[in-house]
Image (cartoon, rainbow, N blue to C red; front, side, top):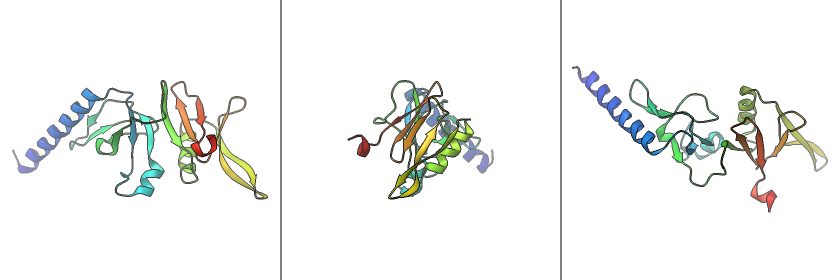
Length: 172
């Protein structure tokens, strides 16, 4: 066996060991914080803007070169296990799949994600200091839509409905 092939087989065996250990400890539906692009210790701003508070939707598996991945609600494809943290303190409760904090920085990503899953969304505007400005996002169609303002957490439920938890600054 060539050196390359032996190294590849070792990498695949190690990746499968990690995936098996993950699956034994964390069933589908585990609450996680996922960093699809970069972990916060390497780029805190980018990580904050792409971070997902969510639940797993598949068991872990490996790619052909041995990298272990898992799929989560709110993201197409797999995310390396190195970019997944178990979430012990999330706002997710029973039946909730995903939580997004709406900020000016995450607005575009959340709006595109909602479009991608077929949910109507548009900017929510209010007058501030005599000017009309975007202060949040309206999700869903009337009646039954919800409004999330910047700082609020948007919750996606398993039945494809949405709710909003006000930010602590607004709620208190």
